[in-house]
Amino acid sequence: MPTAMVVCPHSLASTAGLNILSQGGNAIDAAIAVQAALSVVYPHMTGLGGDGFWLGYHARSAQLYGLNGSGRAGAGCDRTLFARLGLDAIPQRGPQAVITVPGGVSAWGEAHQRLGHLPWADLLQPAIALAEQGYPVSASQARWTRVNADHLRAYGGAVNPFLPGGAPPKAGALITNKPLGATLRRLAAAGPQDFYQGEIAATLVTYLSELGGYLTKADFARHTATWVEPISTTYRGYRVCQLPPNTQGFTVLQMLNVLEGFNLHTVGHGTADYYHLLVEATKLAFADRDRWLSDPDFTDIPLAELISKPYGDRRRARLSMAVAQNPSAPTLGGDTAYTAVVDGEGNAVSIIQSLYFDFGAAVVPAELGFPLQNRGALFTLDPDHPNALEPGKRPFHTLMPGLVLTAAGQPYLVLGTMGGEGQPQTQLALLTRMIDFDFDPQTAIDLPRWVWGRTWGEASTQLALESRIATEVQQALAQRGHQVAEAPAWADQMGHAHAIEIRQEGLRGGCDRRSDGAIASL
Image 1 (cartoon, helix red, strand yellow):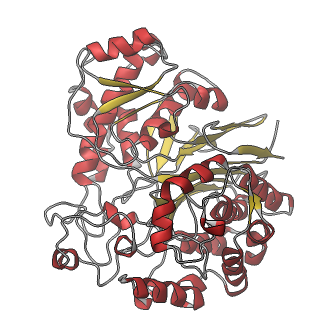
Image 2: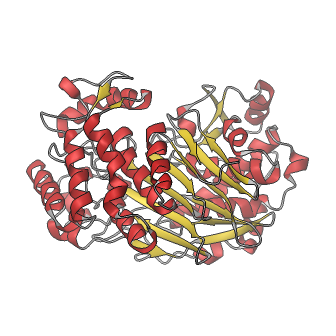
Image 3: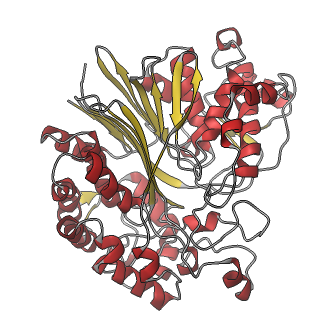
């Protein structure tokens, strides 16, 4: 069985990470190379203009670590700014949506400086080659470019690398991104700080200013990624780890605390009781998330209580196996790219990076070749809400890389997914399938999935079930009060999940066939 592995949503990026491992790099080096490559070949989902979160295990020190690479709102970005414009919500596209500094590149730099092995410049070479020499357009990029063509034309300038010849490329077409190649070359030579204090930062600020944007050189210069202490709970003898707020990672810990009071073997996998139970646990956790989740530097979040076993017991008492709850609709969406890496030394990295919407704000500085995120659109303008916009604040974040340790404290499972509201729900599916039912990673990912609530940013309380779920199960759930909606057999809205299971005899991986990804291993 393999002893080193990379899994991400694009095969060329997985290969880029594997090449770094083959050159003597560690999992941290490979993860950076993968993220850089994804910025080229999966630009609609992730890139230099987005945020990122790292959760990892460092074998030499036997330490778990977390890194928050989300950006903060600019100093001039407050609620009165949008009130003066007559807006009751932050725009989702265009320069006014770019109100938080992209934090992903800062996280790459922090991770490399503390834990990397190979020289920084080496890690960007695979991405540079893809950008300059070209790559075949994935089906996913082709589809999302068609959807966003008008936005990209409006905010991406006359020459846009994602619209070669002025039109969306077809799947399989070979395209290059020379501006992004030049940007990556500059990053390789000048270091990640150039993105925040150098020529790249200056170009970004100038472009945004010309469009009427708000971020300044000072906003970029003051940004830094933050090392954080991971949070966790126990489940069936394992320790399940997540990152603390401003991410929604604590929700899956709450769900597991609720589920631990049930014997899932008795419930049975794939039964109506199984789906009902997991969906109802999700609703309980999301109610707390929507009440509390924000930047902990601005909001006093009772996190220790929310993820405690006694609180899980109290929440479990509110769950009925006979009737579905009917809470308000969550309204989050997002496009994201998740990567799992394990190396031969025992290092494990779980990393997720995103632009939020497909192509983010659709603002693409022509000289730089990458889109800027619209993550700030997640802020609310309601002054009484914990997630209200304030200068210097980080928004509510859906990104949540996962990592599971054995009782002895060794990595057992590296997992995550894209998909906004679906991220904790899909992680819950994988965790119960692998821990409770002993499925291998690929089977756990391949089995039918569901998502309650969000459908690509649209408010909903529907329970979307893939059509592969038996008709009688869907009917039983509808009878309990779930607003059942059948989704395609392999619905993209269920996210792109990936996982690596670490066993004594080697590694087992799983890659979501809904993505364009692949498992690369040594």
